[in-house]
Image 1 (cartoon, rainbow, N blue to C red):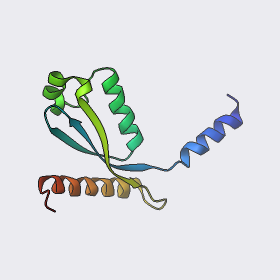
Image 2 (cartoon, helix red, strand yellow):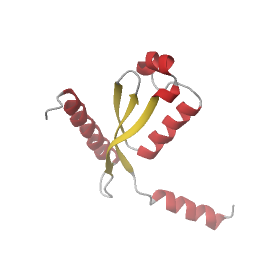
Image 3 (cartoon, rainbow, N blue to C red):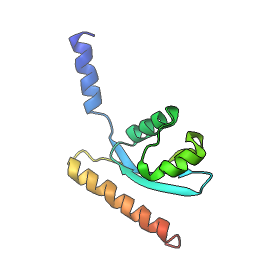
Image 4 (tube, rainbow, N blue to C red):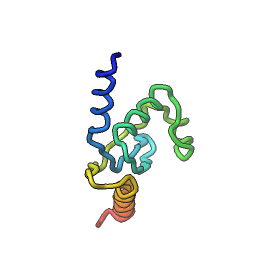
Length: 113
């Protein structure tokens, strides 16, 4: 790869839209749901699909369900996405994503909200 191509790819990467948010991993057979926040939704999706393809459990809290149902019993669902503003710092974006997770956890515990 020549220098100009590498520079163009680096610039494209730095100027990409950063999308985070809240997602959940569901175990269909056991009606269990794990809500998580991420500052990189595409990365979270990719990691989940890697775990499924290698039949590796993503988290210790899911281990019992994973062993019982296998990777095919799990799904990844985006709950809400949040696009990072150009003026936000890493910390501000992280705080916003975690606040969004707290709201979804509260809503999940109190479905009438």
